[in-house]
Image (cartoon, rainbow, N blue to C red; front, top):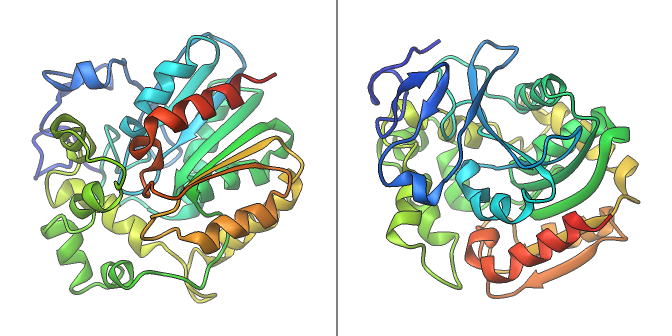
Length: 316
């Protein structure tokens, strides 16, 4: 397990001051973009998870789950829109964002689900509305498969929670030990390009780009970015295949839940096959296909997507 210190040696983001009471203290330019006070939770595996807990104190809340290579920064504008009326819980998965970045953690889908399930239990939540993006889909619906009675509304943003035969060549390359790990961890060849390739309607501002990439500024701090890619199961021989298959089976329990699908049509990874599959699996969902938006659909089309999500989540 890593300990706190300077980035590059211990896996702690260098842009943040040392932990105070286990929670990262935000400094400098980031706070205007990310005006929250992160909290800390120790996962069953013993790692420190950073998470946001914003809004009204209640046993009902919105759980927003990010994917790879983002972090809770991705949801910052949605939190500000929703928190006045609903509690918002937004964790940074272990190895991501402001969470601890151990070099020897079991970065698998099953562990990710365990971590989030433990956080939810610790907060005493009895009802959860899900907002999921990228790998957050498999993690969030993995939690839902275990506790379907807890789940309310479902908001799906360019993600998957079922096996797929499709993988872009550039991601397949990143899955390799060589040159994949060198590209992802050494050259930042996953998080860096994603900040450009995931946007089509607009470009990230300099501050936004800096914020998205901030936690992933060294080989050590990109450990989970690499591990997330390696954990994509393509066939039954992969260690996470059975976990993903269980997540997919659990979707049947949620097919009648109120659901909203918001999809960026220019996604280089989660293309139209996934959009159609979600419509098949959640047949009663409202579906909004934004043909000109990219993978980071919440950021790329924020002026359109945030009101859609806010209205959907607030609807009793």
